[in-house]
Each structure stands twice: as C-alpha cells, then as structure tokens.
Amino acid sequence: MGNVIHLESLDDPALDVYARLTEAQIRNRLEPEKGVFIAESPKVIRLALDAGYAPVSFLMEEKHIEGDAKELLLRCPGVPVYTGERALLKELTGYALTRGVLSAMRRKPLPALDAVLSGAKRVAVLDGITDASNLGAITRSAAALNVDAVLFSPTCCDPLNRRAVRVSMGTVFQVPWTVLPALAGDGIALLRERGFTAAAMALVDDSLAMDDPRLKRCEKLAVVLGTEGDGLSKETIAACDFAVKIPMAHGVDSLNVAAASAVAFWELRR
Picture 1 (cartoon, rainbow, N blue to C red):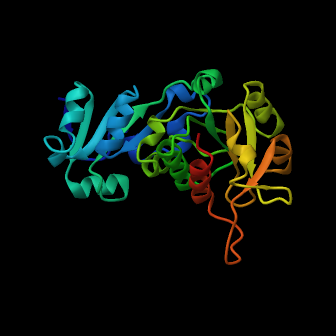
Picture 2 (tube, rainbow, N blue to C red):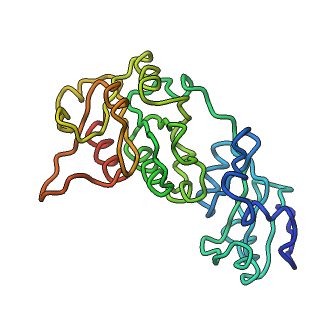
C-alpha cells in the first residue's frame, strides 16, 4: 500500500503539480522526459500503469484508499498518497474530485518514428490540433477503430495534457504515438519514405469522396487532419497524394475535426 499522507494544509510543495503549476511547467518543454502529467480516474491510471508509466504521487479522498484505488495502490508500494477532507482537496484543485483519484506520473522519452510505424498500415496524422478535447477524442476514435498509430505535429497540444488524457479515456496509453519533427512537405516526405500514401482531409476542388476505391487500395495509408479553424495548410495538402472529403447533406459544409476523424477511420480501415 502507498505511503499515506494526511493533509492538514495545502502548503506542501509536492502538491504544486496538482494545481499550482501550469501545463507547460509540468510538461517541462525543454526536457519532456523529466516532466510529469496528470492522470485522472482509476481506469485511466490503470491503463497508464499497464503502459509502463511510473507514478510520482497520488491525490484522493480517503474513502478511495480502501475503495476504488486500492488495487492501484497495491501495485505502487511506497508511492506517496496525499489525502484529506473533500473541502480541502476542492480548495486545492478548484473542483470536487468527482472521479475520485488523481496521479502525477512521469513522462517517458518519445519513441522513434520507425518504432511507432513498425507494422502499421493505417495511421492518423494530426497537424495543429490545439483543442485538448478534440485531440483526446481523436485519439480515442483511433484506438477504437483500429488505427495503428497516431502522429502529432509539433504544433498540436500536448497529447498528455490533463484534459486530452481524460477525454481519450486513457486510450492515449494504448495506441502507439509520437511527435513528428515537422509536417507540411518534410513530415509527409518522412511517411512517403516509409511506404505510406498520404490522404489530406480537406475541402478543395479536387477532393476525392471518402469511399473512393483508390483509397481502399492503399496498403499503407496516412490520414492527415488539420486544425479546428483553418484546416490543413496549402503546403501540407499539396504534399499529400490525395485530398479527401466526407460528402455532406443539408448544406452542411463540414464536421468537427473529432467527428470527421471517426468517420474517416471507419471508412478507411483495412
């Protein structure tokens, strides 16, 4: 069982990670492998542990120590477990711990691109997705719909952002992913060198319909999705082999990027 520490005040610096540090500070942008992230809920924490992430500490109401979190704590002997009255914890985090359990976990070094793409046939490439909820939802769809890997451009929000992890329901720990060094022509070129055909989700004049047989014939396909507002840049679209769109009805021009990703992943599955 973990090392249980009963809180009487919120002054302990070890609690900074749960409330007083910004996302950038806990991420440690210069050396991400030395940073941490926050996982919420027993299910998400369990998936992170299964994926080899190491907990730094836990924060929870006392009732969860012998309840929902008991199995987790048995897996993590000696890890500090901070606990206190519900009102005190709400004062720290700014909200009631409705999910009951938080854990600060150490990041791991990003895997190499070739390691992530080993054996992959269908990958998602996200360019400039800055909304953490959208990024988490896309990751969840990718895992559920048998996408082999997810690649993030450097301009995406952090895949281990607290909200992104929560919305993904922990699937960010189940589907292989890494960050591309660039997108546009350079990033697409890296994929093409590895045998991938790139399909840009874009509303341009020469876009193919999602059910075009040419897409289904691609042995290795990368589905490229752009930022919520402006979509993909002209340079990225030009670098791809195809532009692809989802046929719309009732005058609707497009779907939210998270919804569009689910449609694309399903239609373009192997």
